[in-house]
Length: 109
Image (cartoon, rainbow, N blue to C red; front, side, top):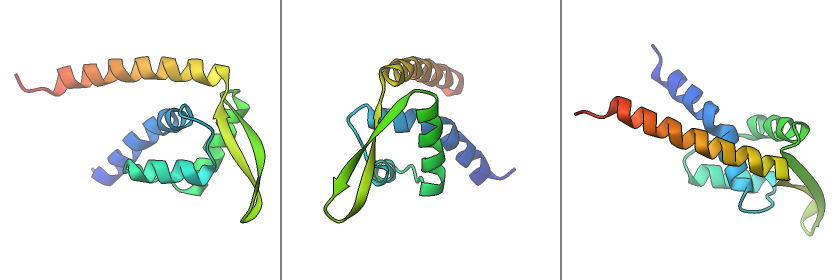
């Protein structure tokens, strides 16, 4: 069994939750999202992030706006929609329940 593959699958499973959580703190440009994920030791590349952002937008969880940039072309800033905020709240509840269940299962007693 390859531990790196298992670790990658675990991270992939929470990536959507983490991205929505980052955006819950305010509008973000994709490179800002990537930097925040890197700070948290969740390495995400553009090739993973952009399709996920598009899917979340198509699902109605995100919207975006264009903003002029002094250092290049206009930038697309993403933000949570009301539906996205509600979805994130449900994910937070599910995450907390999952963490509790894993702790109870894996704790030595």
